Structures are given as structure tokens and as C-alpha cells.
Image 1 (cartoon, rainbow, N blue to C red):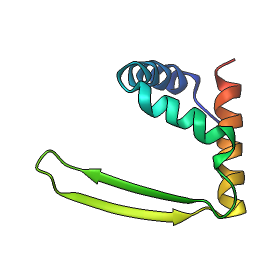
Image 2 (cartoon, rainbow, N blue to C red):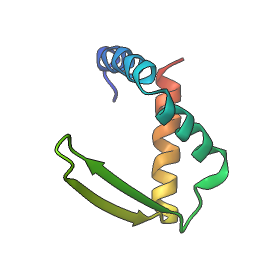
Image 3 (cartoon, one colour):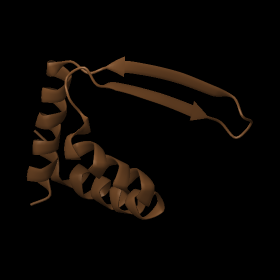
Image 4 (spheres, one colour):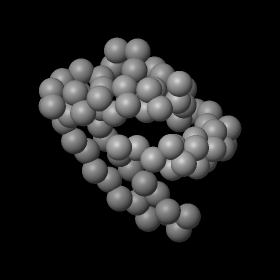
Length: 80
């Protein structure tokens, strides 16, 4: 069960994140608009301030997509 106090704490942090990083929010909305399908590949790169980077990628399975769908449903339900 989700602790309502944890939800409130994270909600405030999420709002600050959204304000600070509007491009990632727009990216997320575009991805939800139909780009994510079984077999889609996520390719992630993180570069530190010194220029060193690390990269990983993964191909989404049907189970992965269902997991994300369920998590989104839970999060939407907690914000009502």
C-alpha cells in the first residue's frame, strides 16, 4: 500500500522537477503519444560535468510496457 505522506512528499519534488526540466516532460508526452511499442529501444546516455559518459540501452518487451502502464495507473490514482 502506498503511504499518502510519501505521495505528498514526492508530488512536491515532482512539481519542482517539472518546472526545472520542461524538455523532459515534453519528451515524455511525445513518447506516450505512440512511440513506445513492444520492440522499441530506449538508448540512454549520462554525461558527467567532466565529460565522461556512460551509455545503456534496452529493448522493451510486452511485460515492460504492461509494468509501465500499471505504474502510471497507480500514480494517476494517487493524484486524484
